[in-house]
Image 1: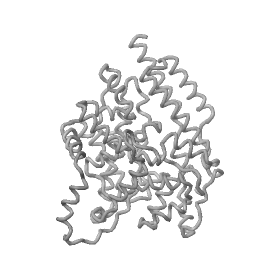
Image 2: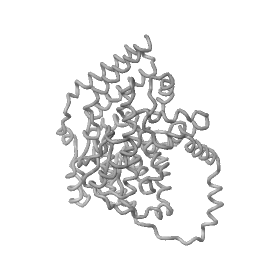
Image 3: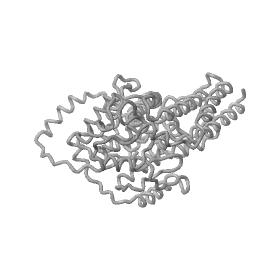
Image 4: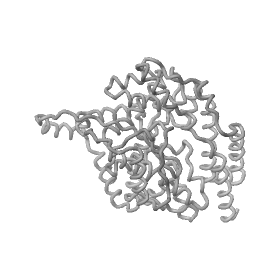
Length: 443
């Protein structure tokens, strides 16, 4: 096969996948209406939300599920036949296609025990181990919860006043992101059907019309939803041949959310209370995987000092699509912790191995860490276009290299001995009371 023929076939197959998967909407298919929350609070947190298999069956998809599943299966076979069973880009495309087939299986089993099996196959389990490490996600989540619950974190959780309405947020984010992407590249719109205060999909950021925002919330949204989620979508759409990089199956979720959390960190946009929420979700998922019901998870977080409103949101994110009485849950929210840690380790290793130039490939579209070597190889031969939209620290890698170079060196120090040394200095310092914790439930 000539290079030209290969590229044309890759483009045709990529475009087929984009067309076939377009109607599949995971979060829209498992979302709960606002009335469920209202009823739960009206009953003083004593009754399980009225969500079961029959509830989900009423939420009929606007597409022929069986026809889409068969079309995906046929495409999977066609990719192997036309590109070969061992072609690296073809294998990525096949894996992406297979993931969408698993998504349909997930949605077919909403409200049943099988939902958990499909969710774990797509997003993993809290018992999973990190790449190259013997720690489980649960152990890491528990450790991070402890760190972000220390007195120092509580002192930093000063109250950021939520002075901006949803309309204000739309206007301000539109202005900020037009400076980053250019006018007309994306839209920011009001929405009343999302669980979180905001979320990104395609070239659009949705703002919950019932939410209000602080200046720090807007900064998080700008870099998390805008720079990362929308940025990688637009870069994927700029690909001349590998156009499927503009859409994201669950296989890329951990890398996407890891990038978003990393950019929050590198731009000093995040704060301890928000970081703790990410860790709390790991604990909630483990509880649900072990059989806890919605009430048990909700009250666990209430008893740990989290507001009923935020405790409900944590539990809702975990039980949407599953079984509120226990037995099945949605494990997607493991992606934040898993993605962040594995991405940091990936960047540190790329720095130490002397190949930092591969790092911008994280933004060429929707990719996994395992995809990067293949993507970079085809970037060098011209098949993959470089990312147009990059955060500043990935546009000029000098600062990023130094940051992760130092972090790699620091990681070799025995932190227990260092902490013991400095703790003597702080033992008699006056302790201030912790500031009130701000409410924040972004994506």
